[in-house]
Amino acid sequence: MSAENKPGPVEDHREREQGVLVYPVFSRRSGGLSLGINLFPGSKHCPFDCPYCEVFPFKTETVFDTGLMERALAGCAIRARESGNAVRDICFSGNGEPTTSPHFPAALAASSRVRKRDAPEAALVVITNGAGLLDGERAALLQEYAAGPERLDVWLKIDAGTPEWYEKINHAPVPHAEILAGIREFAARAPVTVQTMLCAVDGEAPPPEEEAAWERFITETARAEGAAIRAVQLYGKARPAPGDPRAEKLPVSYLEKRAVRLKRAFSRAGINSIPVCVYP
Image (cartoon, helix red, strand yellow):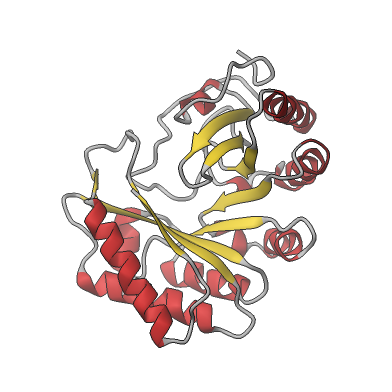
Protein backbone atom coordinates (compact mmCIF):
# COMPACT_ATOMS: atom_id res chain seq x y z
CA MET A 1 0.00 0.00 0.00
CA SER A 2 1.47 3.35 -0.95
CA ALA A 3 1.95 6.21 1.46
CA GLU A 4 -0.59 8.20 -0.56
CA ASN A 5 -3.55 5.88 -0.03
CA LYS A 6 -2.93 4.53 3.44
CA PRO A 7 -5.78 4.54 5.96
CA GLY A 8 -5.70 6.68 9.11
CA PRO A 9 -2.80 6.99 11.54
CA VAL A 10 -1.56 3.96 13.47
CA GLU A 11 -0.26 3.50 16.99
CA ASP A 12 3.14 2.04 16.06
CA HIS A 13 5.74 2.60 13.36
CA ARG A 14 6.00 -0.86 11.80
CA GLU A 15 4.63 0.27 8.42
CA ARG A 16 8.03 1.90 7.81
CA GLU A 17 9.36 -1.59 7.21
CA GLN A 18 6.94 -2.02 4.29
CA GLY A 19 8.71 0.63 2.24
CA VAL A 20 6.48 3.65 2.91
CA LEU A 21 8.00 7.13 2.64
CA VAL A 22 5.45 8.89 4.88
CA TYR A 23 3.69 7.28 7.83
CA PRO A 24 1.14 9.02 10.10
CA VAL A 25 1.30 7.87 13.73
CA PHE A 26 -0.01 8.95 17.10
CA SER A 27 3.17 9.85 18.98
CA ARG A 28 3.40 9.95 22.76
CA ARG A 29 6.23 12.48 22.71
CA SER A 30 4.58 14.68 20.09
CA GLY A 31 1.32 14.50 22.02
CA GLY A 32 -0.78 13.65 18.99
CA LEU A 33 -0.59 13.12 15.24
CA SER A 34 2.92 12.99 13.80
CA LEU A 35 3.69 12.64 10.09
CA GLY A 36 6.86 10.59 9.92
CA ILE A 37 9.28 10.76 7.00
CA ASN A 38 11.28 7.65 6.18
CA LEU A 39 14.45 8.29 4.17
CA PHE A 40 15.38 4.59 4.19
CA PRO A 41 12.42 2.64 2.74
CA GLY A 42 14.62 -0.15 1.36
CA SER A 43 16.53 -1.26 4.47
CA LYS A 44 17.80 0.04 7.80
CA HIS A 45 20.80 2.41 7.74
CA CYS A 46 22.19 3.57 11.07
CA PRO A 47 25.71 3.80 12.56
CA PHE A 48 24.28 2.90 15.97
CA ASP A 49 23.16 -0.59 16.98
CA CYS A 50 20.95 0.11 20.00
CA PRO A 51 19.45 -3.02 21.59
CA TYR A 52 16.15 -1.18 22.18
CA CYS A 53 15.77 -0.15 18.50
CA GLU A 54 12.32 -1.10 17.23
CA VAL A 55 13.27 -1.48 13.54
CA PHE A 56 13.12 -5.16 12.62
CA PRO A 57 15.27 -6.61 9.79
CA PHE A 58 13.59 -6.03 6.42
CA LYS A 59 14.30 -5.52 2.73
CA THR A 60 12.17 -3.88 0.05
CA GLU A 61 12.75 -2.67 -3.49
CA THR A 62 11.50 0.82 -2.66
CA VAL A 63 13.87 3.68 -3.47
CA PHE A 64 13.47 7.05 -1.81
CA ASP A 65 12.17 9.79 -4.08
CA THR A 66 11.90 13.37 -2.82
CA GLY A 67 9.09 14.32 -5.18
CA LEU A 68 6.98 11.31 -4.21
CA MET A 69 7.66 12.02 -0.55
CA GLU A 70 6.58 15.64 -0.91
CA ARG A 71 3.31 14.66 -2.60
CA ALA A 72 2.61 11.95 -0.02
CA LEU A 73 3.34 14.32 2.86
CA ALA A 74 1.05 16.99 1.41
CA GLY A 75 -1.70 14.42 0.95
CA CYS A 76 -1.39 13.24 4.57
CA ALA A 77 -1.45 16.82 5.86
CA ILE A 78 -4.50 17.74 3.79
CA ARG A 79 -6.44 14.62 4.83
CA ALA A 80 -5.59 15.26 8.47
CA ARG A 81 -6.91 18.81 8.21
CA GLU A 82 -10.08 17.67 6.45
CA SER A 83 -10.73 15.06 9.15
CA GLY A 84 -10.17 17.54 11.96
CA ASN A 85 -6.89 16.00 13.18
CA ALA A 86 -4.28 18.60 14.06
CA VAL A 87 -0.79 17.67 12.86
CA ARG A 88 1.52 18.12 15.83
CA ASP A 89 4.71 17.68 13.83
CA ILE A 90 6.38 16.56 10.63
CA CYS A 91 9.18 14.30 11.80
CA PHE A 92 12.29 12.81 10.20
CA SER A 93 12.93 9.43 11.81
CA GLY A 94 12.29 6.29 9.80
CA ASN A 95 14.51 3.24 9.43
CA GLY A 96 17.81 4.78 10.40
CA GLU A 97 19.73 7.98 11.03
CA PRO A 98 18.09 10.58 8.75
CA THR A 99 21.01 13.02 8.67
CA THR A 100 23.22 10.41 6.97
CA SER A 101 20.91 10.07 3.95
CA PRO A 102 22.05 11.80 0.73
CA HIS A 103 18.40 12.83 0.28
CA PHE A 104 18.17 14.61 3.63
CA PRO A 105 18.88 18.20 2.43
CA ALA A 106 16.32 18.03 -0.39
CA ALA A 107 13.77 16.23 1.78
CA LEU A 108 14.17 18.83 4.53
CA ALA A 109 13.52 21.65 2.08
CA ALA A 110 10.49 19.82 0.65
CA SER A 111 8.98 19.11 4.06
CA SER A 112 9.45 22.75 5.01
CA ARG A 113 7.46 23.77 1.91
CA VAL A 114 4.65 21.36 2.75
CA ARG A 115 4.47 22.53 6.33
CA LYS A 116 4.29 26.19 5.34
CA ARG A 117 1.51 25.50 2.86
CA ASP A 118 -0.51 22.63 4.34
CA ALA A 119 0.29 22.34 8.07
CA PRO A 120 1.55 25.70 9.35
CA GLU A 121 0.67 24.77 12.93
CA ALA A 122 2.97 21.75 12.90
CA ALA A 123 6.51 21.63 14.25
CA LEU A 124 9.32 20.40 12.01
CA VAL A 125 11.38 17.76 13.82
CA VAL A 126 14.43 15.62 13.13
CA ILE A 127 15.25 12.75 15.49
CA THR A 128 19.00 12.18 15.39
CA ASN A 129 21.68 10.25 17.23
CA GLY A 130 24.17 13.06 16.63
CA ALA A 131 26.35 11.23 14.12
CA GLY A 132 25.49 13.80 11.46
CA LEU A 133 26.90 16.57 13.66
CA LEU A 134 30.40 15.24 12.94
CA ASP A 135 29.90 16.11 9.26
CA GLY A 136 30.51 19.83 8.79
CA GLU A 137 28.00 20.27 5.97
CA ARG A 138 25.21 18.39 7.75
CA ALA A 139 25.86 20.21 11.01
CA ALA A 140 25.71 23.56 9.18
CA LEU A 141 22.44 22.56 7.49
CA LEU A 142 20.86 21.55 10.80
CA GLN A 143 22.08 24.76 12.40
CA GLU A 144 20.61 26.85 9.56
CA TYR A 145 17.19 25.25 9.92
CA ALA A 146 17.21 25.12 13.73
CA ALA A 147 18.32 28.72 14.28
CA GLY A 148 16.41 30.13 11.30
CA PRO A 149 12.74 30.86 10.59
CA GLU A 150 11.94 27.16 10.05
CA ARG A 151 12.67 26.55 13.77
CA LEU A 152 13.62 22.95 13.13
CA ASP A 153 13.40 21.09 16.43
CA VAL A 154 16.47 18.84 16.66
CA TRP A 155 15.67 15.92 19.00
CA LEU A 156 19.20 14.95 19.90
CA LYS A 157 19.92 11.55 21.42
CA ILE A 158 22.11 11.53 24.53
CA ASP A 159 21.64 8.05 25.97
CA ALA A 160 24.93 7.80 27.84
CA GLY A 161 27.25 9.92 29.94
CA THR A 162 30.02 7.30 30.17
CA PRO A 163 31.81 5.30 27.44
CA GLU A 164 30.89 2.07 29.21
CA TRP A 165 27.14 2.66 29.11
CA TYR A 166 27.42 4.11 25.59
CA GLU A 167 28.92 0.79 24.47
CA LYS A 168 26.03 -1.13 26.04
CA ILE A 169 23.09 1.01 24.99
CA ASN A 170 24.26 2.45 21.65
CA HIS A 171 27.04 0.08 20.52
CA ALA A 172 28.33 2.56 17.95
CA PRO A 173 31.70 2.74 16.16
CA VAL A 174 31.78 6.52 16.63
CA PRO A 175 33.86 7.32 19.75
CA HIS A 176 31.75 8.50 22.67
CA ALA A 177 33.98 11.52 23.29
CA GLU A 178 33.51 12.68 19.68
CA ILE A 179 29.74 12.38 19.91
CA LEU A 180 29.62 14.41 23.14
CA ALA A 181 31.96 17.06 21.73
CA GLY A 182 29.84 17.38 18.60
CA ILE A 183 26.67 17.69 20.66
CA ARG A 184 28.15 20.34 22.93
CA GLU A 185 29.48 22.37 20.00
CA PHE A 186 26.16 22.21 18.13
CA ALA A 187 24.06 23.09 21.21
CA ALA A 188 26.12 26.26 21.61
CA ARG A 189 25.08 27.39 18.11
CA ALA A 190 21.48 26.21 17.73
CA PRO A 191 18.60 25.11 19.99
CA VAL A 192 18.10 21.40 20.65
CA THR A 193 15.75 19.07 22.47
CA VAL A 194 17.63 16.40 24.42
CA GLN A 195 16.18 12.89 24.27
CA THR A 196 17.39 10.03 26.46
CA MET A 197 16.25 6.41 26.41
CA LEU A 198 16.20 4.88 29.89
CA CYS A 199 16.00 1.11 29.87
CA ALA A 200 17.80 -1.87 31.32
CA VAL A 201 20.37 -3.61 29.11
CA ASP A 202 21.31 -7.24 29.76
CA GLY A 203 19.40 -7.02 33.02
CA GLU A 204 21.29 -3.95 34.23
CA ALA A 205 19.87 -0.46 34.78
CA PRO A 206 22.22 2.50 34.28
CA PRO A 207 24.68 2.38 37.21
CA PRO A 208 25.09 5.34 39.59
CA GLU A 209 28.28 6.58 37.93
CA GLU A 210 26.45 6.65 34.59
CA GLU A 211 23.54 8.60 36.05
CA ALA A 212 25.93 11.16 37.55
CA ALA A 213 28.00 11.56 34.35
CA TRP A 214 24.88 11.98 32.17
CA GLU A 215 23.40 14.54 34.56
CA ARG A 216 26.69 16.45 34.67
CA PHE A 217 27.01 16.53 30.88
CA ILE A 218 23.44 17.76 30.33
CA THR A 219 23.81 20.46 32.99
CA GLU A 220 27.19 21.67 31.74
CA THR A 221 25.90 21.74 28.16
CA ALA A 222 22.87 23.76 29.23
CA ARG A 223 25.11 26.25 31.09
CA ALA A 224 27.50 26.78 28.17
CA GLU A 225 27.57 30.21 26.56
CA GLY A 226 24.99 30.49 23.79
CA ALA A 227 23.41 27.12 24.56
CA ALA A 228 19.65 26.73 24.15
CA ILE A 229 18.10 23.46 25.27
CA ARG A 230 14.36 23.56 24.56
CA ALA A 231 13.49 20.53 26.69
CA VAL A 232 14.79 17.21 28.00
CA GLN A 233 12.78 14.10 27.14
CA LEU A 234 13.28 10.99 29.28
CA TYR A 235 11.51 8.10 27.61
CA GLY A 236 11.20 4.41 28.30
CA LYS A 237 11.04 1.30 26.14
CA ALA A 238 7.47 1.00 24.87
CA ARG A 239 7.68 -1.23 21.78
CA PRO A 240 9.12 -4.65 20.91
CA ALA A 241 12.60 -4.75 19.39
CA PRO A 242 14.47 -7.41 17.39
CA GLY A 243 17.15 -7.37 20.11
CA ASP A 244 14.71 -8.39 22.85
CA PRO A 245 15.12 -9.46 25.59
CA ARG A 246 18.46 -7.61 25.87
CA ALA A 247 16.67 -4.31 26.48
CA GLU A 248 13.93 -4.19 29.12
CA LYS A 249 11.49 -1.57 30.36
CA LEU A 250 12.37 0.13 33.66
CA PRO A 251 9.75 1.18 36.24
CA VAL A 252 8.12 4.54 35.71
CA SER A 253 9.37 5.49 39.17
CA TYR A 254 12.95 5.19 37.92
CA LEU A 255 12.32 7.60 35.04
CA GLU A 256 10.60 10.02 37.40
CA LYS A 257 13.50 9.81 39.85
CA ARG A 258 15.97 10.68 37.09
CA ALA A 259 13.79 13.63 36.06
CA VAL A 260 13.69 14.95 39.63
CA ARG A 261 17.46 14.64 39.96
CA LEU A 262 18.05 16.54 36.71
CA LYS A 263 15.64 19.29 37.72
CA ARG A 264 17.52 19.67 41.00
CA ALA A 265 20.84 19.83 39.15
CA PHE A 266 19.40 22.50 36.85
CA SER A 267 18.14 24.46 39.85
CA ARG A 268 21.55 24.33 41.56
CA ALA A 269 23.09 25.64 38.32
CA GLY A 270 20.60 28.49 38.16
CA ILE A 271 18.70 26.95 35.23
CA ASN A 272 14.95 27.13 35.75
CA SER A 273 13.46 27.38 32.28
CA ILE A 274 14.13 23.94 30.74
CA PRO A 275 11.22 21.50 31.04
CA VAL A 276 12.12 17.89 31.86
CA CYS A 277 9.43 15.54 30.54
CA VAL A 278 8.91 11.82 31.25
CA TYR A 279 7.41 9.46 28.64
CA PRO A 280 7.17 5.92 30.10
